[in-house]
Amino acid sequence: MTQHPEAAAQGAAPQGGWQVIGPGLLVAATGVGAADLVATLVAGSKFGYALLWTVILGALLKVVMVEGAGRYSLATGRTIFEGWRSLGRWTSWYFGSYIVIWGFVYGAAAMSGTGIPLNALVPALSVTAWGIIAGLLGFVLVWFGRYALFERFMAALVGLMFVTMVGAALLTLPNLPALLSGLVPRIPEGGLINVLSLAGGVGGTITLAAYGYWLREKGWHHPQFMRVMRLDNNVAYLVTAIFVISTLIVGAELLYSARIAIEGNEQGLLSLSDILGERYGGWAKYFFLVGFAAASFSSLLGVWNGVSLMFADFVGQGRGLSSGHPDTRVGGKYYRWYVLWLTFPPMALLFLGRPVALILAYGVLGALFMPFLAATLLVLLNSDRVPAEWRNKPGTNLLLGLCVLLFGFLAVTELAKQLGGLLG
Image (cartoon, rainbow, N blue to C red; front, side):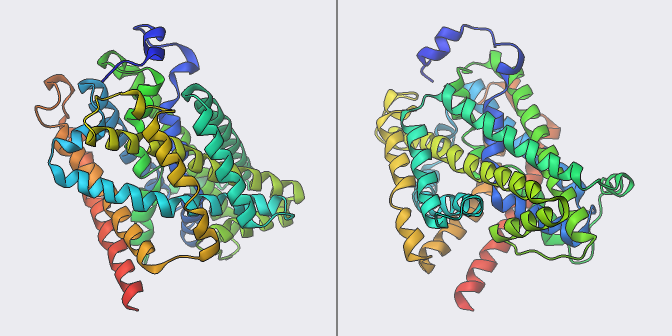
């Protein structure tokens, strides 16, 4: 992996203090969007605190997968896509199809999802108008901004998300004995799918694989950064777990106890903001909506940057460029190609609706990504592609194997849902 000039300037030793926290927080913040908030609130509204243990399990599994992606990059000096290519051409065909279709559909979903809370805050503009503004703002920030600026902006959004949701949880005065009882693993009647979805949805999908690219942009490019990478990852998912637990508390205290059902989409978060406003005053409603907007926009911004780096590496590798070539880095030619793809073509979907065939392809390819990532990490990190000292330990293999089973089951469930929707 070619050393970036910023990396050389930082010297050999990791920086101290909070400066060591960064790429992991980007992965976690990007992965926790509106859909994850809704899934957690619905789980809390249905089962109270019974699925608290699932949130912790989900965070642990994501820690293992992100650590694996980071360890591969630091130990080998290669990107995760280079690792996938070493497993055969089929990985390039799958990833190429996935990233093109996924980006087109996700771009529209991210803009629309960010437009919903902004419209609730300022109704003078429609959801579509706010979505387009959010997309354009994300475009400008990642097109012209360097990694350091991007990281600081994301940290501010994470702060807003965290303060808002933890504050909402504290407002509800959680029942501590009931909360602690949720640490005992059990599956409520009819709750299996919620258990699996909640464990699988805590903190990211494709952006887990972007971690190695953000490490590179940060200037962490060598095994000597392994310890600080693990600290970064652990702190990031601790913050994520607290954030998601707070969401579950809000669902349990405000919805489960009052037997209030909300919609299983972003509109459910608007309903929750209304409930907070009715119970605690208008300030609570708008406080929550600001956090909702921060969570949605952080996901948009993280994808605009991180997945664009993955696409740039994919194209660069296909064109025979060396790893870390300027065209594949932040601000590079291929990076900007994907930023354009994420921003402008998807705007048409905001006006034209959701084409069935495209949504079906998006669902199928997306469902397969997490088991694909878990399985390929399991192979790569147990092979001679990685120096012996950095290969998996038995406990890591066990947890990655659990990831393959969990995400494989969720993939089958999602495929059945997609096909059922097509046939039904």
